[in-house]
Amino acid sequence: MFAKIIKMSLQEQILEAWQNRELLKDPRYTNAVKSVIEEVDKGRLRVATPTGSDWVVNEWVKQAILLYFGVQQMQTWNLPPFEFYDKMLLKGNYKELGVRAVPPAVARYGAYIAKNVVLMPSYVNIGAFVDEGSMVDTWATVGSCAQIGKGVHLSGGVGIGGVLEPLQASPVIIEDGCFIGSRCIVVEGVIVEKEAVLGANVVLTQSTKIIDVSGTEPIEYKGRVPARSVVIPGSYTKQFNAGDYQVSCALIIGQRKASTDLKTSLNDALREFNVSA
Image (cartoon, rainbow, N blue to C red; front, side, top):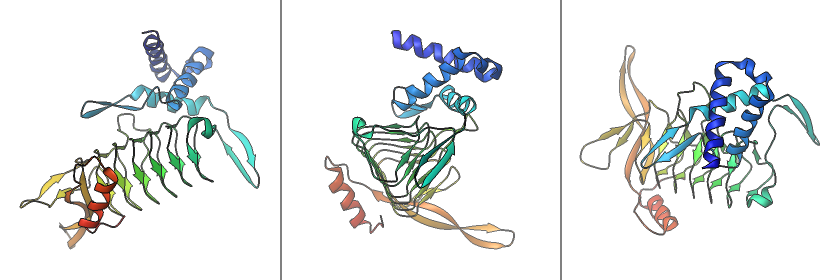
C-alpha cells in the first residue's frame, strides 16, 4: 500500500510538471522525474502493462521520460578510443543483474533488462522492457518504450520501433515466446501476440495488411498478429492512378503448434512452412 501511495504521488507530480515546465526548477519535481526513471529502470514501473488479454499504456510514464531529457545535462565520457557526448547514462552491473552483455551491446539507463537476457552487440533504448530469458541478437534494436516478453528471440538486425511522441501512440509489444526473424521491422505500436513466429524480412506497421491465408477464405488483420501465427512477407495488387502495383503485406500461413516444448514447436514450424529465420 505504501509503495502504491508513493507511485500515485509521483504520477501527480509528473502530470503537474507536464502542464507547467517551470515546476522543473523545483528539486521536488526533478527528483520525481528521476524517481520514475529509476522505477522504470528496475522494472517496477512500465510504459505499458498487460491487463488480461490486452495492454494499457501509462502515458504519464512516457511523460516522465520526456521530462527526463529536459532535466538531464549533456556530458562527455570516454571509452578509449571512443568518445560519447549525450544526456543519458548507460546501464551497468550486468553481472549483478544476471544479464549477459556481449561487446559492444548498449542499453540506456531507464531500460529494464531482466535476468537471463542475452544482449548480443545490440541497442536497447530508454523506457524499453525486456523480460526474462529473451535474446536481443546482433545489431537488433529495441526502441524507446518497446515491451519485449519472456523467452523472445529477436534475431539479427531486427528493428523494434520506439515511441515517445505523440503521447497517445502505443509502444510496440512483442509478447512471450515470440520468434522474430532476421531483418524484421515492427513499428507503430503493432502487437505480436504470444508465441508467434515472424519469418525473415517481415515488415509490420499499423497500416500493413496481415492476411491469414491458411484457410479457404482470407482473414485480414491490422496492427496485431494473432497468437502462434507463422508469418511470412507477401504482397497484393493495388490499383493506383498510374496502374496496378504490388504492395507489401504479411501473410499468416499457419499456426505454431501449441506445445510445452516451445523450442521444438518453433523448429517444427520453421521446417513445416519453409520459413526463413
